[in-house]
Amino acid sequence: MIAALPMYARADNRAAHDALWAGIRDILHAQGIPAPETLDHETAHDAVWDRDDLLLGHICNLPYIAHYQNRLTYIGTSDYGLHDTPAGYYRSLYIVRHDDRAKTPEDCADYRFAYNDPMSRSGWGAPHAHMTRLGLALKPTLETGAHRASLRAVAQGDADLAAIDAQSWWMDRHTQDASSCRIIGQTDASPGQTFVTAYPQHANALRTAIPAALADLPPAHLMTLGLRGIVDIDKRIYAALPIPPKPALQSA
Image 1 (cartoon, helix red, strand yellow):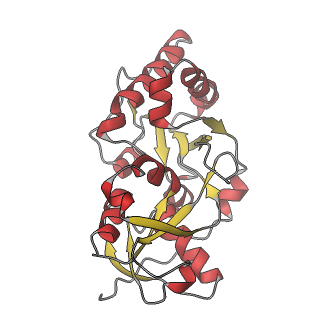
Image 2: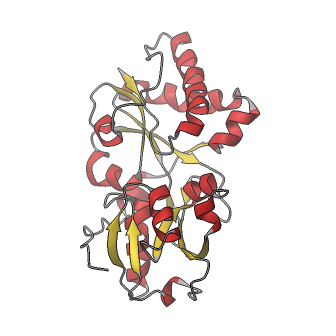
């Protein structure tokens, strides 16, 4: 059996994630539900989602709707209390370098676009849908593997534009890379990262345990995670999200 919370996992918030899981685990144990002692920090996030023994996972809504909504049981959607965003939702923030003249995403025609992953709603799916609705096209030129790496690519001049998950931006807001960039717009709101399980019989217990464990976390851990709770979002809203085409990398 495995539990993993990979979507915003970093070395500097591992202790907070571990404390959150310890609280969830103890609540489950008190109900006679088996649960692993510790979070898995080693297995690749997409490999975690394929595990038949996944007790608790965290997944981006694009791979969830594309591959896993009929394989994993929905528990709830993460609420990070993001500004100007409904509970349980998030947006992607368009960023350019501070010295760039662009004021809106519409000013960024032919900009070299960095994205973290072709199966990321925030890094690729949401900006693709948003720009398509505006009658514009992105020019994907660099796949970075992570929002933090996309931010760095823009800051260092390896790309001109990226769409950064608002929670990821909040986590990196005090970094040198963030100070070298500015926000010029945002996408429409989408459901946030989703808690899932391969054990449907434990979904209700997990749905109760997560907010209860959050309520018992020390304030410092709560501040580090930024997680306010979970909300229930109609699966039809997930199902209505478009699956974007795979980025066709272009030369710079």
